[in-house]
Image (cartoon, rainbow over all chains, first blue to last red; front, side, top):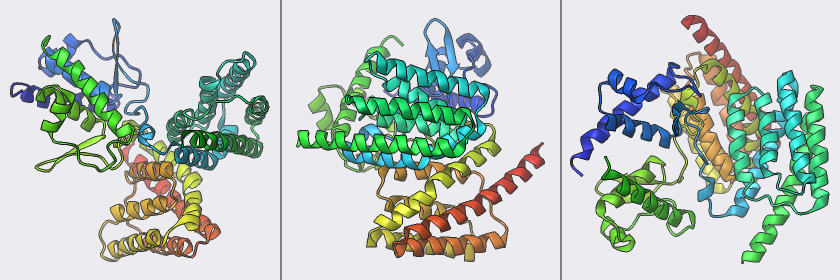
Length: 235
Length: 235
C-alpha cells in the first residue's frame, strides 16, 4: 500500500492539470486528447501516472476512452449520470410526484422559450423526434427513448444551457416509472406531442406553453395512478 | 501494473455491493458504516480492497470519511459538487443569463409551494435565515452564504426532494457572479427577502410567488448589468 500513495497524489495533480486545460477552453468538449506519449513528454510523468489521472477524469465524466481510437473530452464535461442521486431515493412514489411537480414548473416555460428561439434546424429535429415517438407507438414497441429525445430536442431549442442539462436528468428519473399500456393514453401522447411540435414550429409560445402543460398533467395523473397501484401491490 | 488490475476489479465489485446496501435502504443517509474489520469479515476480502472500494464511493459522494471517527453515508448520497458541470462553461455571461431564466421558472413556484406546505419548524428556519442575511448586510460583510441558506430553507419547505436538490446547485452557479456593492440593491434584498418570508409564514402562496418573482427580476437585472461590465472590462 505504502508504495502507491505518492503516485496517487501525483495522479490527482496531473488530473487537475488536465482538467484545467478543459476548464480554460484549451481542450473543448468532444475534442481528442494528445496521445499518451505526447502527454507524458509534456507533463514529464510516468505512463502509470497518466493512466491513473485519465481514470480519475473518466470517473468524473470529464474524459471518455474510446477503445482503439483514443481519449476524448466528453460532450458535457462533468455532467454525471444520475447527478441528483435519484437511484438512492427509497420512496419512489414520492419521487415520482416530486418529478411531475417540477416538470410542470419547468417544461411549459421551456416549450414557450423553444417556440420563441427555435431555429429551422431545431424545428426539423423536434419534428423528426415527434415522428419517431409515433412510429414506436404504432409499432407497439416501447417509446421511452424516443420520448426522452423529443423532450430533449425541445430543451435544446430553448437555447438555455442549464435547461438543456437539467431536462435529461429529470426525464431519466421520470422514465423509471413510465410503463404505458393504456391505448387512450397513447393516443393522448401522439396528439399532444404533435400539437407541441406544431406550436413550436409556428413560434407560438402561448400555445406551446398550454399544450405542454396539458400533456404533463395527463402524464402526472397517469403516473400517480400507476404508482398508487404499484405501492398498493407491494404493501 | 498487471498486479493491480484484479484488485481494482474486485474493489469495483465491493463498491457496488456497498452501494446496493445504501440503495436498498439497509444503510441510510448519515448513518455510520460498520468498522473496516467488520466489513472485511462480512465481505471476505482484504483490507486494501475495502479501502479502494470506500475510496471509489467517496469520489462519487456516496460515503464520507470523518478522520478519527469512521466512515459515513453522506446526507445526499450521489449528489455531486457541481453536477451540471457549470465550472466547465466557458461563456460565464451566457451561463449567468441562463441561470436567472431558470430561477424565474422555478423559484416563484417553489415559494408558493413553501407557503402551502411549510411547517412551524420550516417557518422558524426561514425567519432565522432571513435575519442572518440582514445581519450580514448591516455588518457590511458578504451575505453570499446566508443568501444561499435562505433560498435553500425555502426549497426545503416545499417538501419536494427534487426541488431541494436542484436549488442549491443553481445557487452555487449564481453565486459565481454576485458581488453586491450598490446599497440600494442591498435595501431591495432586505425588503423582498422579508416580504417572501412573511408571505410563507402566513401561508399566502400568491404573495410568496409574486414577491419571489420581483426579487428574482431585480437580481437578474443586477447580474446582467454586472456581467455586461465584466465582459466589457475583459474584452
